Amino acid sequence: MKFVSTRGHAKHVSISEAFRQGLAGDGGLFVPESWPAPPIDPAGAALQFASFAAGALAPFFAGDALAPRLADFCGRAFDFPLPLVKLNDDTEVLELFHGPTSAFKDFGARFLALCLDAIPDPRAAARLVLVATSGDTGGAVAAAFHDMTDIPVAILFPKGKISARQEKQLTSWGPRVRAFAVEGTFDDCQRLVKLAFATKAWTERFQLISANSINIGRLLPQMCYFAHASLRYRAEHGRNPGLIVPSGNAGNAVAALWARKLGYPIREVVFAHNANHAVPDYFRTGNWEPQPTIATLANAMDVGNPSNFERALHLHPTPGDFRAHASAMSVSDDEIKREISASKNYLACPHTATGLRARSLLSKSDWIIAATAHPAKFDSIVEPLVGRTIPVPPRLREILGKPSTCAEIPADLENLGQALGV
Ligand SMILES: *Cc1c(COP(=O)(O)O)cnc(C)c1O
Image (tube, rainbow, N blue to C red; front, side):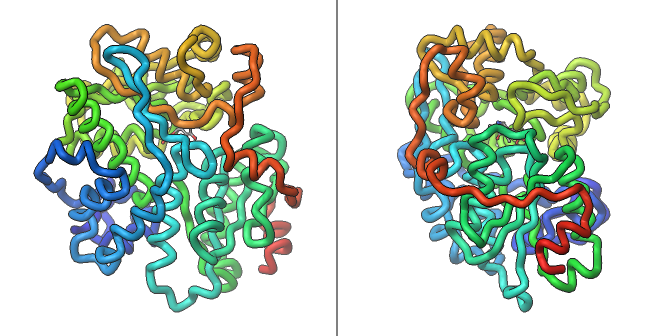
């Protein structure tokens, strides 16, 4: 199978090449050239997730050098549980936060790390993963490359703008993962990363690797957990569920649309956004107008211009077509707080709370809500609302006990270059 750009002006490439490039040559995002129509076997519901994913991904790797290693990669990347928890008779929660950094980004980051490490590279010794993070991406990427490869990582994060536990997940990996607290915003961090990729001294010194969330290698495993969950729901209830996906940059919700496109039993997809409302506005008005980013309690979803929405528009090009498959809503901080304090039987992080709120506004039945992070990661928000201490998952506790190292730098490339020996 070949992969093409959403903008249609880049060369068709293999999956390995799409992983390596990250962004297509014309500035667009990679999508499959055509959609396979695999036989949908209800027995997939009973498979372990890793085996299911290896089967579901096989058509996308057909003809690529990585194909023979796919099952091994899935087994190693997805070695943690994926529970579907019953909320009531017609609503279940898909808990995506049982990986090493307690957020769904572990699925994509671990799979992509194994794939990128296996792609032959004459400059392998000079490789460096360079990533900017507003919170969860950096931790998942750091953990994945640290645990599964020998490739060093440099992470830039905006100083003082992420949660204490998110910061521990960036700064406590030892010498192969270096964290930089940048005096500036997330946009400054992202600007520095882009500049480094475009600067000769940097590309001569390093073979830079981008592992950011527009890489298709992160979306494909996410597509698989939605496919698997829909089969599990159908096996149990005999009906097709709708998927509610807490969304920011819209990668996870696009992965849900892709699972539906493949023919898995998904009735519809709901994009649950926080106060950043570009996608809900599109759903209502049919006009695509990116907005300035608004800071909210669900900080990993604070995106005013969701770059992955380009993939949703590529799949469903007109507003009418989009509305036939999906819907979108915006949830305020007040609603997030109310949902966390009110939900007696389910402890949710602020992101997952947008999904719970969306569910309560929908009149149809049969829903799966994606739970995107463990509530203990956002203890400073959740604990005062529920009035108790949240037990910390073992992997998170382990990292909280380790020493941190982090360099503070002004937001310019020269300082970063000095620190990394460019
Ligand atoms: C990244 C993230 C999101 C948003 O996911 P997108 O794919 O960017 O829409 C939601 N919740 C949590 C906890 C996240 O880390």
